[in-house]
Length: 519
Image (cartoon, rainbow, N blue to C red; front, side, top):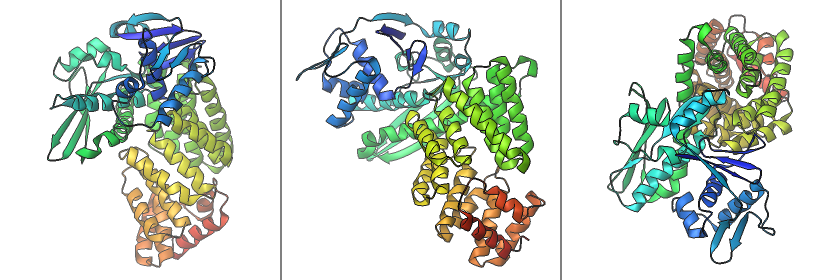
C-alpha cells in the first residue's frame, strides 16, 4: 500500500516520492523526505534519534550534526521552526513527535496505475519498482544492507521525473522468489523491475543488480560490484548511486527504441519526447533538427510538458555545435528560452536545471550557469550529465583544475552513458589547457574509441599529436578527421570553440593541427 498524507498546506505522497504545496511539487532531498515520512507515519508516539538512524539510515553511522540538519530541513519544509515547534516537537533526551493534524489516504498499486493513466504526461512515464536486495544470510545487518541499497536506489531514481518509481512501502512487500516477474509487475503496475543479490565470502562482498522486463521476463541489464566486507556500510550510498546512474540511461535507451517502433499515429506526447531523444544522441545536424521536430510535436500535444521543453532546449544547444554558423545564435536563443520555460514548469527536475545550465554556459553566462548546474546536482547527485556540465562550465571559465574531478565523477557514475565520448573528450581538452599532454592524449584516444564519437575528438587527438611532434601519427588521425568532416578548415576549428573566451588556447589547438598538416 502507498500512503498520501495531508497536513497543514502540504501533501506527502509516497506513491511518487513527492511533497506538494497548492498542487506544486516542492523540491525535497530524499533523506528529508524519508525523515518526514517516518515521523508523520509514527505520529502517535515519540520517535527516538536511535530509531530514526536505524530506520532511515539503516544503522549507518551519521553525525549528530547531519541528523540535526535533516530535522531543520524538515521544519523548513513544513513551515515550522525549532522555536515554535507547532508541527514537529523535540522532546529533550527522548526524540521527536509529529503533532499536526493529518488525514491519510491509502492506495494500492493498481489504483495508483489507474489514476496515473488519466491526465499528466509525467504519470505516463516509464514505471519501475526496486525490490529489497536478496541476502544469503538472514541476520539484521544483512537485511539492513539489502533494504538500504534498494531504498537508496528508489530515492535516486525518483529524482528523474520522467520515471514513475514505486515507493518502498509497496515494492518492499515483495521479495525475489515470492512471485514471478509478471505477477509482481501486475501487482505494482510497473513495466520494469530492479532486483539484486548480496553475497559474502572470505571477507569480500559481491553485489549484483539486474533490470528486467516484467512482461517478458527478459533481463535487460546487469552490473556487479565487489568490495571489502568492512567497507560495505560506508559504501552503501556510493554503490546505490552507481547503480541508479547506470539504470536510468539504460531505461532511457529502451524507451527510445520502443518509441521509434511505434506508428506516428500512435505516439503520445511522451512517446514524441523519447523519439526526440533518440535523434539527439546521434549527434548529427540533421538528426538534431529531426529531434527538434519531435519535441515540437510533443508540445503541440501537451504544451505544458516540462520535459518536452527541456528536450527541445537540449537538442537546440547540441545543434549549436553541429549546425551551421548562421543558425547558431537563433538556436541558442531558442535553447535558453525553452530551458527557462522547462524550469518554470518544474523547477525540481534536475534535467530541466541541467538544460538551463548548459544553455547559459554556451552564452558565456558562467556564474548563472554554475548556479543552475549546482541545483541540478543537488536535486540528483547521481545525474552524470550534470557533473559533466559543471566540468564543462569550469573548464571554459578559467577553472580547468577544478573541472577534472567532475569529468571523472561523470564517467564513474555512468560508464556506459551515450555521452561518454563527450565526457572523455572534454577532459582531454582540459588536460590540454593545462599542458598535461600525456593525459590529454589518453582521454582523446578514449573518446575516439566510442562508436558514436563525432569528428571533434579526432581533431583534438590530431592537434595533441601535432603539438607533441609525433607527426606520422598526427597525419594519420588528420586523414580520418577529414574523411569524417570534409571541408574542415581553420575557420571551422576556431568556430568550434565559440563557448570559450580563452583565445590563446584556441590558437595552440590550431597550431597543433597545422603541425599535423591537416591544412
